[in-house]
Length: 113
Length: 112
Image (cartoon, rainbow over all chains, first blue to last red; front, top):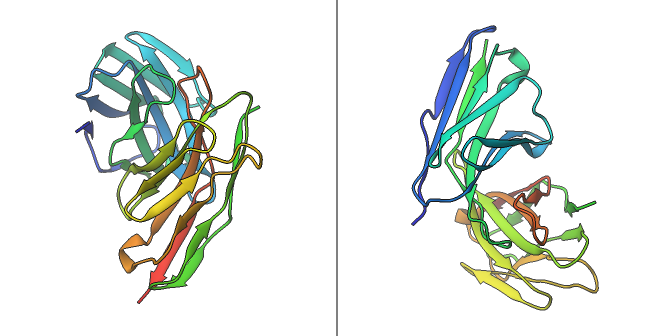
């Protein structure tokens, strides 16, 4: 079974703090994704990485950055957290064949106070 | 562009009722189509998928048929259970692309 592990399920951070969300996958997948999920807005793609050190902006990259130094690990960074970044963050992975399934982690609930 | 439109929720049914959640899409070419389910407090997991026209995906009593002529992939289940209460997402995977396009999600609640 594919395992996508997000390092923290629940975090509370203060406005202005730097926040790291870590994601590790064990399937040797090339593609990794960070989404945020908000009520009424569904899933929105923040960033996407298709290879080590490669990244592509998604629909809402503002206020976020990412790092992919190793194939299995994809980090989401909030340089200076703000209250409007309070959300559920979902990491996902996928192999390269078109039509392949995307596999999700369990999510990280971030509250910025 | 590519997009997915899902039936708006929330949907509330009684146990053993018949379920349909509508999903229509816009895409160039022949995308793959997916239904994902999210149980309370968890991430999304694949429920079923179809990769070409007229394919039927099925899992856990749920079914969906890839209808190219109506650009639809409606989710159905003949007799729902309380444990089916969750949020359901329809998604498409464009041919040759890595990113999926998700619908807004439909919250389903089943009452005993």
